[in-house]
Length: 326
Ligand code: GLV
Image (cartoon, rainbow, N blue to C red):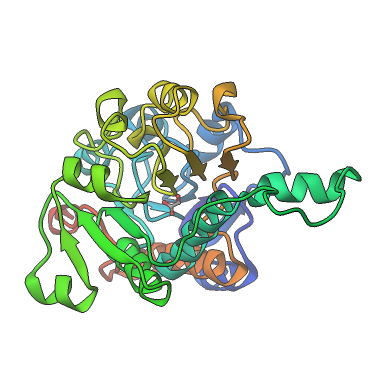
């Protein structure tokens, strides 16, 4: 029997290649630059499977160019790049990679939190500059992390991993979520529920852990920034569009908040020049970027593809209704 043809828009990692190559004929995009839209549309024309990144849009336009496609496997947990309803209409399964990147993403959100509180970017620049004159009493004094209040916007898997880390820093944890967590979860994570306004006015660190949805787009905006404390910091490892970036720049300029540490941006890879200031730590969307985790994410995407072609339910299917239809 002919092996299903799959397009992978990156070479992935060896372990994921092994999984895919065992049962599929895979066309890997191996060029250092990203696959262009034209090339993607040209290569997808005869493919039954796609392994894609969050930088590729899977929508009606792409699906129309991929008449044989049966699965689009995102190598990411966030799938705002995929219009799932469009996939469902064309009976294309859509999958993501939940669960394997929670701890790694929380590690990085914590890295950002510590870096902005303790002015690491400024300190590193000074240490490298040749201008450092030695220890000084008031040099680059930052803010304590331990004992402060962490405000988690979203208490899903990554939010909970953040709450666990906060315990080691003797922090108070407050959280907001569209759906309040059950009491045993709140108790287990020592996380107290607040409505968003109360959280923003109480937290020393506000860390975002919500998916990008119509309800979370611009959740942090001019109005909500004005509720934050002037000594507080914003950490964003979720999606750039959860924050109104122009309002964030204004909040930083007018000192409504003390600083921000960002891994994601409204218009990646563009970074609003107003964010390039000393009290903002900037990272290039690498929160899940450990070798172990990116390997697991790639393998998970590969396994979803293989499962579908073997007639099994892809473990991370987002639109299971397409399976019933076929
Ligand atoms: C990365 O941003 C992801 O959603 O996995």
